[in-house]
Image (tube, helix red, strand yellow):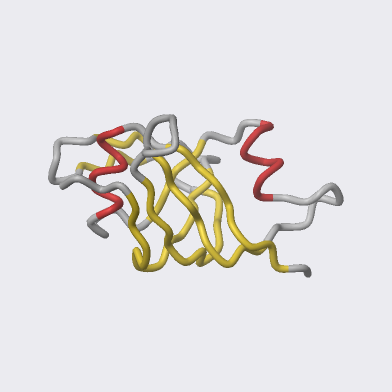
Length: 111
């Protein structure tokens, strides 16, 4: 399996805030065609990335950070996860869970 360099994902402000601090170490995505095309190659094989780059907003000065990509799995249970900033994440059975390593690079972070 070929290792791709970076998976690019955008986040809203609340999830971005708890991920950039390292509190939220998994990203949850509904099983849309778009995310499937990022997680699987044309033959249906899982992709393997080195990193995940998360951005918040648009433009050259948008906040962003990089983490190590640790793989992904499919949720087997329905659950609600609450974070320190009040963010509630509703995970459904069948959602993708992208596993993340530590944040190792930050750019345009004002907090």
